[in-house]
Image 1: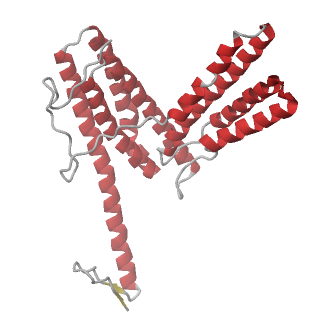
Image 2 (image 1 turned 90 degrees about the vertical axis):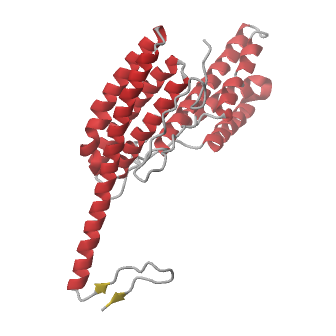
Image 3 (image 1 turned 45 degrees about the vertical axis):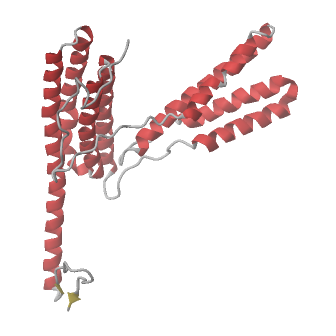
Length: 311
């Protein structure tokens, strides 16, 4: 099916101005880059050389070449999943390590496939071992190892970190389901609107990850509200696929506007509470210094002046 492209200045574009932050500046819409690059795609292309060669061999040679093809395809698939898992791990401040070291298993499958290819290529066991070690080693050098430790924050107990990691994973699953449903609409404006909404949601997620103690204040947004948004998006996509009604799209955009404002306000509230807490801590510190006989002067605004502390 053909896909319509357009923008704010297209004949049927969305002239709605972009949302702004608390300082009046426009908030950027983060376009998430797919971490799967050309190197991973190349891993899926190379095994087909053995699949093609299999049909020019005797039955035993065909079985061996198809087995090599299966091992290399498995290595490519494991590598792709491992790269995606590490990208999600790196994007979060609080995250659990992948349950399965996919890139490591992909390196093992790559080594086995190349080792069998070297052994059956009349090179003998020595050649097979060399190919296996080189294949696995170069795979690890190219894609790196999997994350092996949970990632949290100092001063936060493991139980809180685990709760935040589970809540963020659930929220990301809802966002992925929403994005998949929006892709079915094949509408550029729906895609752009979904990216803008998810940008605000992820700002809240990152705010909670920075301090897991905020989870209680944001749990309803990360769970109930996102679940409702996911269900509404799926229903909208089902209806919009059958009948591309402009009124239905406007109603859906209005729902996203309301939800986005709520998420933005909650994020701003959590960040403002941090600033208030910092001000309180600074006031308490000044009072303690004064009781100890120290007086801290306010920093001067002119260039070159410095804050001084007098006894």
